[in-house]
Length: 245
Image 1 (cartoon, rainbow, N blue to C red):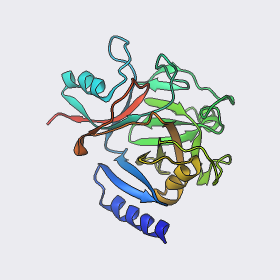
Image 2: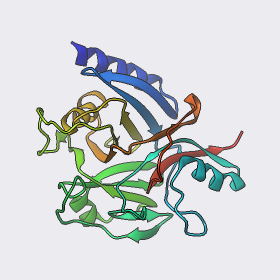
Image 3: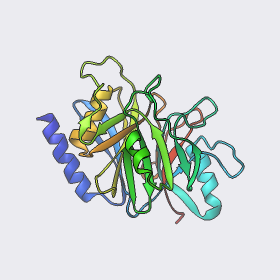
Image 4: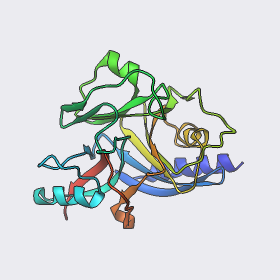
């Protein structure tokens, strides 16, 4: 009954959503913030370095970099795993320039828990694509970031997720609709398992594909609610850009 009520609330909320809307949601007793972006109309980008090649690392730094062009963030979130120097662990494309190749082989940690995937931004759409499929199709992404594991693959949870897992972290990720027009970002406000987080995307947010961005360091920016999580420097950041009023 709890899941059914939450699902109904999510559907009503989505129907009323504007181009970028962030809302609170509770599923199975766990709290989340959900931000839905109309990928067909919004200026959704990835950020890593500034014009001098220095890591931006913070939402405030991204806003400072955008300000000379009369732009600002309306929403942002950390968007993929990174090394100690903040360089991306996996594939990364910014403004059509590949800065890191695709990593398609298994490896240690969450990133290497295959299948993993790529969040790809093209004109008028956003897609979460499983890595091997991404390699086969070779889409021309203006922006792309690879992370892992996949949370939902073609409507199914990642096969390694366990309902009784003891691994609980604050987690964040993104899911996309089949037509690429709907990008749904989520960050947990409580410690959750991969199974709980993946189930949120599959059963409540109703997206066929979803990708884990990171855990424990997860942070979000939402101008409308004056939320700007702070902490140590991040690697890739995804954000929606708008004109400064």
